[in-house]
Image (tube, rainbow over all chains, first blue to last red; front, top):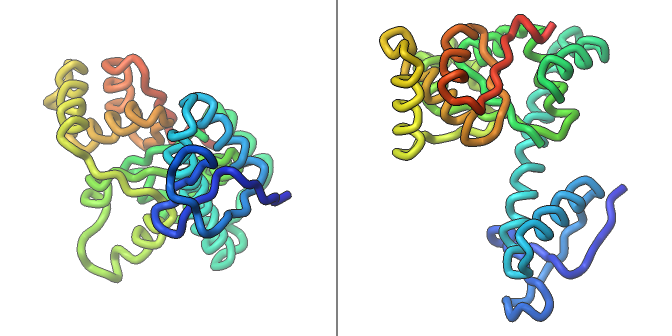
Length: 101
Length: 134
């Protein structure tokens, strides 16, 4: 479920975050993120232990999310072109086990 | 979010519609991960002939391309030398290994012998053979 948060807001350029009280330039837009991405951002911020690092944390988390979406789109395009290419859940489970995922 | 680094054989297998690699990449996708292709792999997998490269080009769009800088190139050289089989191991495989090591990734390969030699030299590289995926 998507939800909107305040406090860490990417700007239109470079997804730089503005954290209240940090003195950074205030963002003009907010972003809506899903629970998984938000958890990733929180983890990264906690690990880096500095509000100023939130910018890098947001940028990194969004980069990971975009990379995952890029893969998803490529796979969905393949499935749309050739529905028989979509692996079964059993095939995916075997592959996930081999990959240690 | 564990990335997967592909070697040339696996990229070509994906382009050819190999179900094992598709299942593997679907597993990576569902785990929130992503796919990395070192640019040297693109060099090894393409011909410059648009028709021949079309399928590889479509798959590459679903990946993150990684450019090998000097630090990683030197690490690739070190791994290749430390493997004790530098004469047998390609520079491309060494760069794939160094990329996987750097990113903490799983390296997917259709030719695990050389990558496993490099993994032994690394001590911190996970190699998964295409044949193990399905």
